Image (cartoon, rainbow, N blue to C red; front, side, top):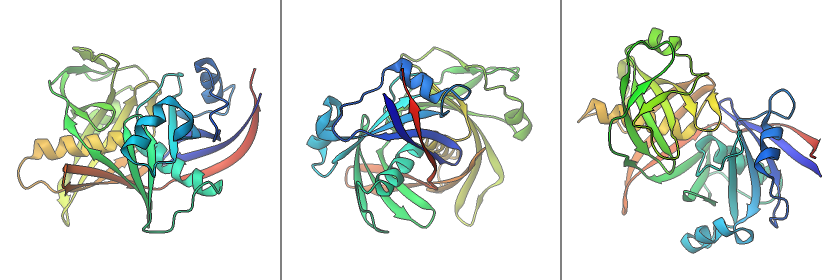
Length: 291
């Protein structure tokens, strides 16, 4: 099988994308690992298959939720494990669907995309794309988190934005830079199914012109440390607002190793939603032979 693919990235979070509209070419976990391998494959933090929601079982729930969710983001981590959602990935996916001529999306228009976390609405804006990640929730508990080169275990705050996160506050940039995230952070208790772990430092001052500012590093479940994590940036902003208390802003600027992401919390009829905005770029196309 020859895989005709596109490489894309959003603030350095990179993905291999390919079109399989009729759902005929699902890759095995071993093949996904090979494609995402940075030395022997294309290289990426994950793989995204563009498939119509009607052509796979996971897409049926998306169509039940929103009949306009024609396309499903079939997202897999670099280690071949499935993932519910990816905030950077869905923006890159929207760019890919447009580039392939599979959808048309004018500035201000909304595109409904099916994911394993539910339907997500994507809009084009001046920074690239903005995605409404829907309702979020505190996941409960404060697990102790240990990371290599951080001498003391720290409490983390569990937040779910369609996929699981634990956010840890650090004292300063020196601590954040010292953490060795090539090793998987250890949590006690360890959540079933694993979690993404974000380490966050607030800027000084925290708020400028009504916008909160934080810096973040992340170890992604199934991918290791990445230059960015969109849902992780959202979780980090939500956690920081939670810790800051009353009067904390609803708009945040999150600095990650690969750039800057915007997070906004806003009320809706079914509760508070949170959105993520940032760039999405397609880097190159290619063909890879798969065994």
